[in-house]
Length: 163
Image 1 (cartoon, rainbow, N blue to C red):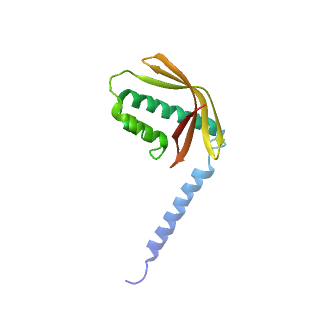
Image 2 (cartoon, rainbow, N blue to C red; image 1 turned 60 degrees about the vertical axis):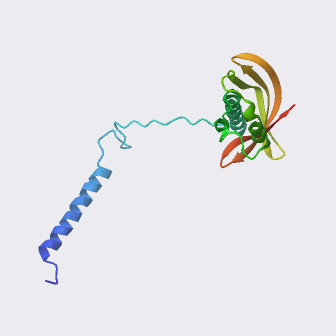
Image 3 (cartoon, rainbow, N blue to C red; image 1 turned 60 degrees about the horizontal axis):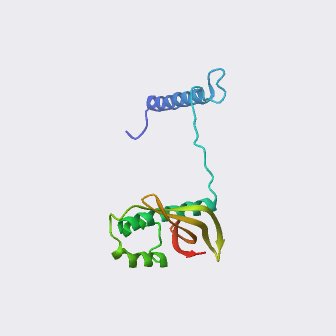
């Protein structure tokens, strides 16, 4: 009862040798002309788009302005969440203006014109003209410096300054 029978040991060794042979055959014995083992295999790779820091800052500034325009059209502060820093002076200003906004007063758009981005005082600043429209009609052209801060890996609008 305590020992292993010889035929079980021989069977186990035979099974191990058989599996090793199958593995060896799969690794070594490739069809002729299939030198890398990839015959019939198609590999596609997505092209990586390299985005510079400046481009990401400009994109973050435009996204914040898009949300700001939606807020200006609806008075709903939730639309700027994750795009304008809730601890920043710009959010505080929007919060103060919220009760005065009447929904249905038209659709605003704020579009960056010829943006450029650079680091100032350790933070990114996007300088651009901002074209403000209401229902696709030009209201005014502004010249702003849009200050950004990083929060949890995202760039958020901190404040804007007139140039």
